[in-house]
Each structure stands twice: as structure tokens, then as C-alpha cells.
Amino acid sequence: MTSLLSIASGFLEQLASPRVSRAEHDAASERLALLLTDERVRARFETEVTSLSEPDELSAESWYWVLGYVAANRLELNPDLLSQLCLRWPSTSLVVRAINARIQSAEGDDSSVDSVVTWLAAVVGQLRVNPAEQEDRVTSDDAVGQPDTFDPGEPTSREFHSQQAEIVFWALLAVGHPAALVTARTMLLDSEQFNASLQDAWSERLELLDPATREAWLRTVGLQR
Amino acid sequence: MTVSWVSSEVDDQIRGHLVPFGSCRLAREFEQRGVDHLVIKYVDSRWAGRYATPSALKISDSPLQTWGTATYVTPIIYPLSTALYGRIGLVAPFDPSDWTVFDATGPVGRTLYQRWARSQPTFDQLVLTVHSTLANQELRNSFRIEYGIDCVLFPPDQEAHLHTDTTRHTWMAVSDWITHPALKEPTGESESRGLDTGFSRRLGHARFTVLVDEDFDLSADSLPVSIAPRLIEPFTNPFVRAGQARGQGIMSARRSRRLPADIADAYHHGSYVHLYLEP
Image (tube, rainbow over all chains, first blue to last red; front, side, top):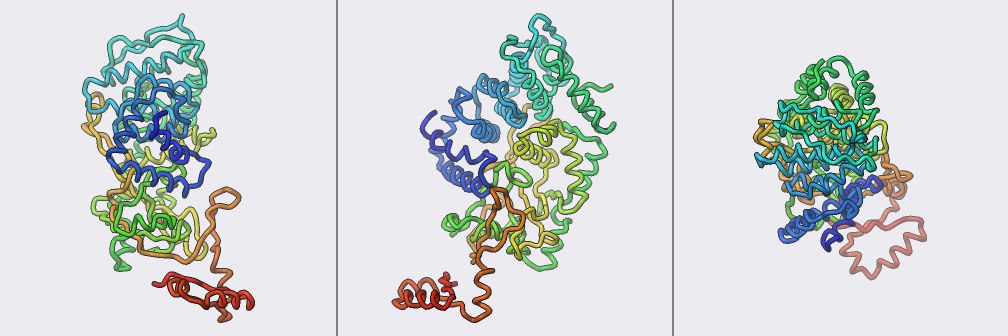
């Protein structure tokens, strides 16, 4: 880890940790914000943040804050790094932030929508459990204008973690961007490729909703009955 | 972004519950009291120097906050309501002329938010996992972003004994927005809005204005306290009532050759010496 980020990491630990009090959070937050009011310090800090390349360089709490900062300031993190973060965290909230960081770093660039879709496909592709049965089911381009061919990425069943597939699925829904929704729909339609229980989890959740809310969900995901 | 997980009925009810600041209950209270649009935020003594001259309040981005990432303040009409958070009261003006307010002080607002939250894909994370703190923050932020809420009014969720009236007081969570160009395809929208996390532009001229002579304990058994007891006044009151309390300005006390004797005398008579900052 580089020097300034190393100094800041002490604050970052406190900023997102549920183990410290609200007053300590606020004090750490204000100290770091004051540090970043100096333009040179801020520029250096952002350079160091954007050069991060390994998930282990920060704790989950620090990543949570850093990803919020990255999204808010439209910084660009290495997509491979964001992908790794999506695949390792057992918290939907953290995965939401990683996906949002990727989407928002691409905003303002007309040509980048496809790159977001491709990136999401590669992320979920790594969660496929059974490469032999891969099937390119989702080709709909009505929502996001994604590429004609959906590249599922290289399946790595060894890294597969069924729970993680579910976490990424719910995170995609929570992000709500059409690129994320179409990827979630892909997972759902191809659920046996990811996690046999994904379809069950989805169905159970739908059953718990009142009819009007259920309809809103199906409409949002593009699965009207 | 026009993604909605709630039914159109709930969506309409939430939108129907949003009001311009001028139409909200708090605006009427300001008007009735005849006071300017000012808010107060109590902070730790360490920040007195920073706010000796007007400066922007820090936006709270802790996951522990009641309504997500926002600047948490109290209307000046409840000047002592949040005194438990520090001895230094920072006062700031605000201009709510373009604010959209969500009133969560009553059952309607609170129920609408809960109905919205229950409909979100991450609701299970909130109620069924160890990650509820982060899930809560994400949900609260998402709600405020989705409905463009500039200010949430909510009842005190912590109480300073004798200073906070949880049945009458209202606290505020104020949003500061950052706007960026959005992906032009596929959303069709030209910009996206998020919550800022730096210093508040809406509450940009806060100044150290109040000094409170009391302290409160914010936690009990390592948990956030519900009712924070006063740590000083209960023990000084008996002496005050008995006419035994002795007060002396700190500046004169520093020069006083009699101070050691005064303290010794107070000790021997079971009293105390209050060394205060002269107003």
C-alpha cells in the first residue's frame, strides 16, 4: 500500500467499521475530509486509490468507504480488481458498491455501456458452476443494447461459491441499472448454471410479496407473467 | 433512474407524502416562533477552533446514522435537543426554498418507508444477516436518492435527559447532492444524482455559537444509549440549592493566589468550585 493511503487507512478503518461509535466515525470522517481539502493531497490520494490492484490491500470496511468515494468522484478502479471484490465479499452492500463503482466510472462515456455489460457478464461468468452445460440463453438487447453475443466469461467451477452467486444476484437487482438487471435476468434464466437454489430463493421472495409489488418486481426485471 | 421495486400504489403514496419545505410542519413552527432558518449541531470540543469562523459542516457518512449519509442537525427552535453529542454548538443558516421534505416523524412516513424497504431486493440482508448496518445505510441512501429527498424530518432516536423532548422535537437529515453525467444509453437520462460525502454546501456557514456546561454519556455497556443521563448537573444541584456552590471565572482563577485555599476550603466543606469560561 502506498504512503498516503497507508496513513488514511487508519481513518478508513474507523469510517466504516460498525465496531466504533458514531462520534468516532464522525471525527475520523472529518479529519480525513480536512486532509483531502488540500488539492495536492487529494490528487495524490486519488492517484493512490486508482492504482490499487489487490483486494487484500484494504480491509472490507476500508473498501466500503473507498468504493463510495470512487463512485462519488467518478474515479476509475481496475475492472479486474472490482471483479475480484464482487466475487469474494459475503455482503450484498459491498458488492453493490463494487458494481456501482464500475458503472459510475463509465458514466458520461457513450461507448462504455457495452463495456459495463461485458464486465458484468465476465463477473457472473466466474460464478458458473457447470461449464459443460453452458448455454448462451440471454441475447435480448431490448434493455441495454448489449452486444449480440453474450460472453459468459471463462467458467471457473473451482472458484464457484453458490452463496456468492446469490449475493451477486441480489446486488445486481439492488444496483438497478439496466445493465445490472439484464445480467440478473441472465442468472435467473440460467440459474442451474450458477446456483440451483437461486431460482428457489427468487421464487420464495416473490411469494412473500403482495401481488402489486410482485408485479413491480417482475416488470422491473423484465419477466412479466 | 426509473427502477422501482414497489407497487405503483406505494410509490404514489410516498410521492404524495413528499412536500416542499414551506408546506411542512417544521416550517410552520419556525414561522410561529418568528426565528430565522437556523440549525444547530453539537460536536466534540476538538472542533471549536475549526468553527471559530464560519465553515461547512461535515456530512456524516457513518453507516450508523439514522437516515443514511447526510448532515444531521436540529432546528434552532429546539436549541438543546442534541446537546448530548458535544459541548460545542455550531449554528448554521439554511435556505430551504427548493427543498423536498420527507416527514418521518409520524406513523404515515415511517410506515411508507418500511413498506418501501420491505420491497427492496436487499431487504433480506437487512433482517437475516450480520451485515445489517451496511444494508441499512444502502437502503436509506437509495430511498432518499430515488425520491430526491433533500431533508428527512425524524423524531429523536437518542435523548439527552431533560434536554430532549422525544414527543415534540424534530431532527433533520439534510442531503447534499452530487450530479454527474449518466450513461446516455440505456437509461436515456442525462444525469445521475448521488449523495455527497464531503463538506455540506447547504450548511456551509456553521459557526461556534453555543457552549454547554454539561456532558452526557453516549453509550451504556458499549451500546448507543437511549436516554443519556446528565453527568454533572445532578451532582452540583444539591450544592447550588444549599448555596454552597462557588463559581469563579477561569481567567481570574488562573491569576488568583487564593485558588488553592478556595479549593481546599471547598473540599473541607463538602462543596465544589466551578471554574467557568467567562461569557
